[in-house]
Image: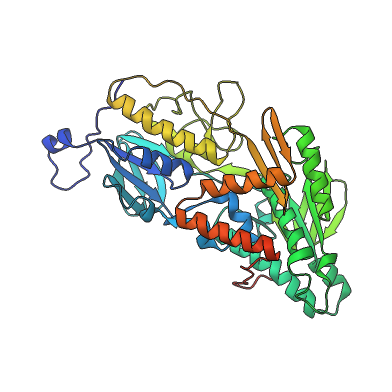
Length: 436
């Protein structure tokens, strides 16, 4: 059943006739992969699109770990949303923060205004979670934003600098021990990148310490790393990490975390001045905003058309949504899935405007990738499974392809080429002070 444009006197002086004639308003919360793809897919539609995000840029999150480990600078993996949509005449970008959704009046509530909608696309993403131990956030940095990435970079590099000047061998050992919690793609990539940084990139930069003696520990509560991949690829990834010098601890959860390091469930204590958290995510507060049921991770439970119960005019996509695919398995929270959901939401809106019933959302799985380090990665394409150098090449080209903007692709490609040839990481800047 098509949605009648909401009769909301949001524009001063707007009459009933004006409201009847105006075009449907599509409001998109979030400028990530899902939100941007929804907006771009509506570029020729007879609708007015408003994209709302609390930041002014679109971020390519899969490469955040490279910023955190000094491989890339923030500007290389981000682009202003206004620039991306600058030529889309039916799109307006607002840098604002949604505080609530009034589904009865069909309005987004921010700190300064109420923004009406006829259709709403919620793509507000997710944040890291400490499973009820929020006090750990001070000691174990998570990685979801550019601010997180630059803070992690500063803490990693500061640890080496402090180790260089201290005369206390116990403090030096603590400073040169890095703990990464979580064996998913982010944790694996962080651990591998830190090991490469310490053993290859900066090994000749210091005079009083041997950075190659750095200890990198990857802690995973489950029985294997990369649990979303086939066991054979998990095993290969673990072997590649261990060749880099990473110690992989499996089946042992973190019991506590403080300034001195971490204590594991079996009582093992690991002294560390740099603990990084990649163990889990929690969706935004979208479920509370729209009064919809949520799963344990806070994701809105939606139907086969990405609608929460009772709201056919609302689409929840990306990491904010709990979606079950046609095969009965959960749709993963990855960039390709968010992009597909964004494009689907746009098509569904156009179908509804035309009085048509949309087909159910059907996620197409193009594979799963994770990089471990230089020439080391794993790739799962169903029947085709790759590891090592071949998988690393596929990972590089896939991530370059997904970067927004030709300039970003070119700059990142050149930086990666130089880094590969010289075994270097150029963005080794400490911004801010992060002590242990």
